[in-house]
Image (tube, rainbow, N blue to C red; front, side, top):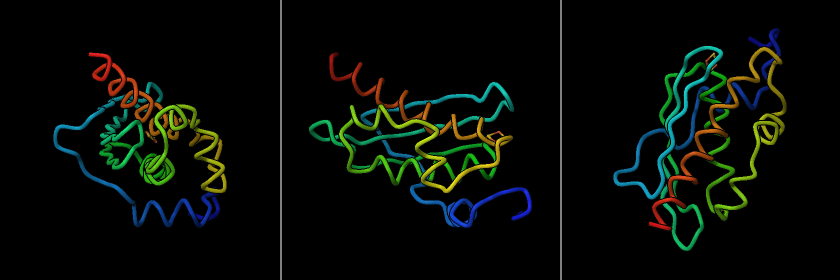
Amino acid sequence: MAQVGYSKKVLEHFLNPRNVGTIENPDGYGKVGNPVCGDLMEMFIRVKDDIITDIKFRTFGCGSAIATSSMVTEMAKGMHVDQAMKLTRDDVANELEGLPPQKMHCSNLAADALHEAIKDYKRKKEG
Ligand code: FES
């Protein structure tokens, strides 16, 4: 796989993904589909005083989607929701030491699902 441009960090997160699973009655939930490949991503967050205290994801996406979601959940845990809202796919890809260009669309899923989960949290909070 190295010859198609995956960093060691991508492979490590793909083989050993963090925060896989679901959260029952989450404070925020986001689900997005990837228009390029049709894959799906779900993100669940637990929030206390606007800080993301727990986060889990579930995906039918490819290896890059798994690696980027694993990375984004690690980055977002402990973050203020407004700060996490600003995480972009580029932040995630940079943290993973790059993704092959043909796989950048996969990293949209992780950031978008996180943003949807935060929007859902804010909607619920405003009631
Ligand atoms: Fe679908 Fe990567 S190919 S998420």
